[in-house]
Image (cartoon, rainbow, N blue to C red; front, side):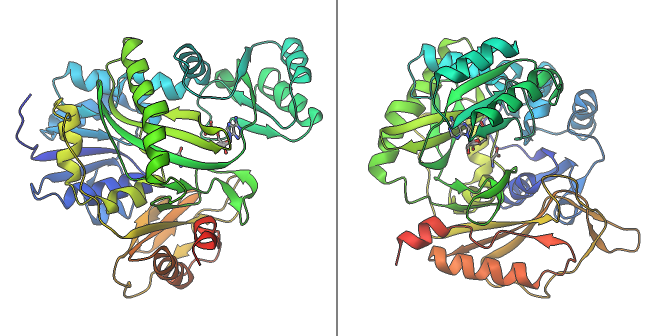
Length: 430
Ligand code: AMP
Ligand code: GLY
């Protein structure tokens, strides 16, 4: 594989994460040609978009060949678990993103829990079931709240933190009998509930070498004060100062290094982002989950904080030259506030016209997630998460003020967004 930086990059996906990736790759001093599939109306302002779905593996490989793409960066988990990286490698096209065996770390929570337990990586105790009666019997032996998780991919919705035995029972029945998650729910985990603050640790992995990206914290619930149902993520900030340098060192020693080693020991040659969801419990950090990709909306706050060239970083991982690479970080704080469509994460309306402020404050950018352009040229809502307003500023308070000023100015009848992104950290810092 050539070591000189690639001259053309295909980003696969269509959300805010991919918009952030496209922007970061564009900013590379190597000035690559950046294209995206399928992209969205906002990404199309920055890169040529090709209407090939993220799960059309053959179509994406053919696109990369036709466009003479030298490097593919994959955003979402679905193409990875369908073997997009395997197919690209077979076609001789370098790719950042794990092969299907690595993507299984996200696609099967049981597979991952077994690895965590086997390698003694801190995680909540759990048991696995495919029948209702033994699952309910196990629930009765544990304390409430208790966590019920569908084994497979469920777009972030396959986890129920049950606050009563009755809620646990209906979650178990829903998944195993109701077919609520299809094949993804034919097996489940019953897991002890962890308490504490969550943090997202994104790690660029290349075999046994890795680099930890800046810390961040997501806000998963739809409502202020962490109320209402879980979503894909309603907002993020970076750095997450709850992760002090000493705590990050502990997370590295107890979780990141053992995880990378365990994955390699299981015979998985992992190249891509390993996103470790961690609960900071009173007794120490504990793994909630692995994701086999960049987080959304974590990426929107993590990438802008890198002074290191993102293309160079991902290419170093893919070409196995990550060892010894140290990241240069920007000192600013970043915040991303997600604007969603009213109703999300359940049914929501599409088609509302969106208007944008004429000018943005310094350090603010609007990343598109679910937008489309009408033939008349108007930008309209076309997804549950619609936009992410990202701000980079000397303090988190300024980042929040700037991001929210722009959120307020975006015109869109049924926009909803949380008002308290970053509140935990802002309330800690007087
Ligand atoms: P996951 O799909 O595994 O990321 O889970 C979604 C969300 O459910 C997590 O971000 C947590 O907020 C919550 N969650 C998952 N597992 C646990 C657990 N064992 N204890 C408490 N909360 C959990
Ligand atoms: N923001 C959480 C995720 O990407 O899964």
